[in-house]
Length: 161
Length: 190
Image (cartoon, rainbow over all chains, first blue to last red; front, side, top):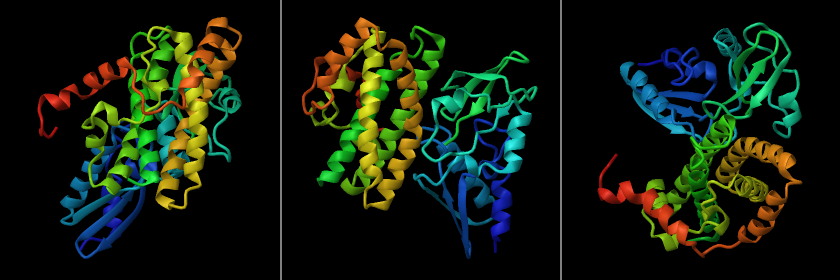
């Protein structure tokens, strides 16, 4: 009989397909794990609806749960319950250490251009606040591109969702 | 088909077709950063189309792919505005982007208030992502709003926003391209 903790531990071993330094658990996309006998039901919230990694993540979860000897059922929940605020403290630190600036906290009313252009974002390389927005969009839907004027390093910033 | 399903399909068709049109800038935008921006916006729009088609498919007993690619061109309910092929006219592209994102905010706002909690949740998710499209459109609007070519494009395109059920000749070409791979091997699973 599989325990809930075993399932969480197994899911914590799955790296994010696009940013492999953090796991699906760090990313906060697993909303719930429900174990009943040998059935494991996972509720999963996508980061962005157009994220091409969605199927990869679902397959990886199914594989990990099957390896525990249980039968997986992955439910994709497409609502507003995932936010970048759900990225764990550990996950944010892992992001920073690999050169991705973690997202700013979600604010009521959504993101604002002024906020994106402010100096509130620190460079993950040198820690300077003297950074500017280069592009709202980046290499994946969840990232923006910023530039650090202190160490002259472009870096990727997680969008606040 | 209920009015609600019809409305969902309308939005999904707009997002799919506009996603295709936006993706036509990939590799040829006037600035490298805009290459990235329009490609990313296109990806988001097609993601929204997929989620909305999935929702409609549940009610209609079909699949998202069949709704997106297996209907005849006349069945698409997208606005005339999104059907136009605007490459290489950047001023008109930004005018369409601005008009579309402004109108889209309003109808997604209505869906967010839906009594159907699942649909309202999906609309809220879409709106979070669209906020970045609006920011991008606003930024360009501020940059171009005094340019005569941009103003002329806004005036010309604005009336097309609410025209549905009519298809431009270029829509037929897009439909041919968009569905050609699926039609080439009927019944294949990918």
